[in-house]
Image (cartoon, rainbow, N blue to C red; front, top):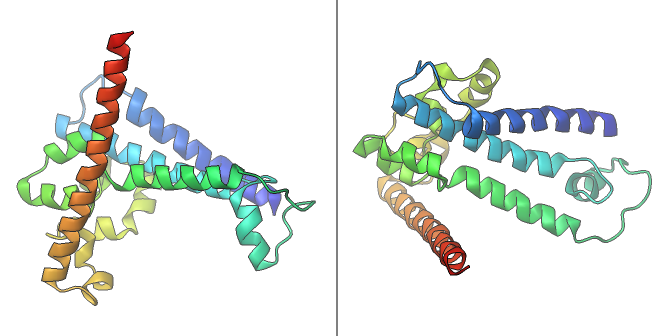
Length: 212
């Protein structure tokens, strides 16, 4: 079981490294893509990298890691050779998982903000409420593995819908249009709060550097 978990972690780590390389380091020197698609592609890779990083932290094998301590113990699987000691590492991992998952979902990074600004008004409203994914619009430019992974998501299947994945059967059962509008507005406002927090931290860091 440890070997299997280690192999899965290596595969996910490779995906994280590739996604962040494409987001931060890769440049379209030959300008094969329109600027709009290039922005969407970088945003998509950043989201892939952060979400896969959350999975990697969760599944990472180790004596004080979350998956062996919490999940496999419940299922009765003995992954560890000895009982783990109490450690703050689990809480730190939980914090990292929440942080990376939010970084992927909220579209508050510079790449995602640029992608949202490049959209039409109708699509922008859905994107600002985190209801669509940039990979859906540049699906054909993704590697095969990422196309397979993304094609099964609600974000891809409902990219052309006004309310994004909220128009799926899963959400339409419990939400009418008024409920969808309320939820969209709530997500939008929470996202604006997060962006405001980032802006304040940037201003504080810049002011401290200028004082030095």
